[in-house]
Image (tube, rainbow, N blue to C red; front, side):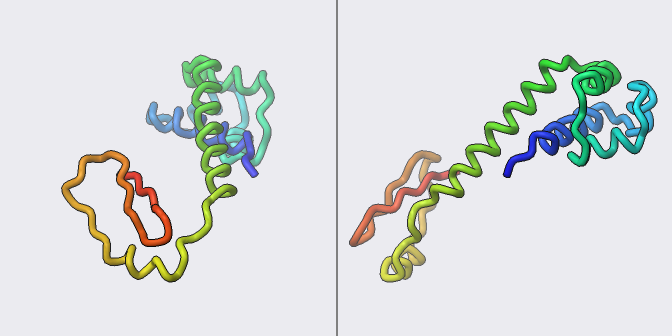
Length: 126
């Protein structure tokens, strides 16, 4: 399950760390307790819109920028979750030995199709 509060906390922490600021500095500037800000960053507490506004002001970050980054993280998490749920069937045991001996080098980073006797296995170079 994807928890929005965790994604939001991760993004807030990264924003703070990019600026080289401590929790103490940001909590003081935002007028939020150090402990509460820490819990928000760890995804243990849900931040109200008022609290988010105060933290964004303290970090000198627009809330829309923060939410855009959270939205991007959420989209990636949903894709990963969807891919894990719809993962194709494992390669049959009879084909695995043939795939183990395949080596591809010097190939441009494009889609490569490896033909196996019973099926085609698609490999995407990173």
